[in-house]
Length: 188
Ligand SMILES: Nc1ncnc2c1ncn2[C@@H]1O[C@H](COP(=O)(O)OP(=O)(O)OP(=O)(O)O)[C@@H](O)[C@H]1O
Ligand SMILES: [Mg+2]
Image (cartoon, rainbow, N blue to C red; front, side, top):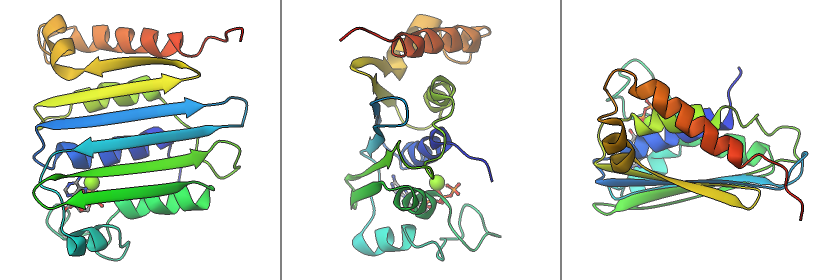
């Protein structure tokens, strides 16, 4: 199966978007280069949260609530994230409080041969900004000492709505140019 870290981040952010949150915050950072360093992300939402028991079930690969996917008996999202992080020399942290919200973090060692490829980060941000549900999505991206921020409401206003004709193309160009600016090699 071919998947990327961008797929994982999208999946976990979608959980935040589906949690009834007014605000979902995503941070994605990469440090180091040429096979050394770390990929790390955090998704924070102020949605419905989970009790200790619900969280225990959500991270168990053999439990699924059967609501969203009635024919699937195993969950994918959180168990898969945990498995991938642990198998590639990384780690994870999940905190949730019922009625308050959830914070999911995971990190991956770029020097580990089992780390999945990062994938298409700007394409991932575009998908996430299009999620229906949360009132606001804030994204902070940093790589190699540079960073940029994205706010869904600001971007939507600037584009005259994310559903408008041509908006997707403009959004895509904008996101790719921001991402490119973080990839330029600079002198120390
Ligand atoms: N951020 C969150 N806030 C509240 N509940 C969450 C959150 N993330 C996960 N959960 C709970 O854990 C369950 C399992 O999540 P998981 O992503 O594994 O599956 P899913 O979202 O139900 O389905 P899928 O992601 O496969 O479409 C969710 O159905 C939800 O009840
Ligand atoms: Mg999910």
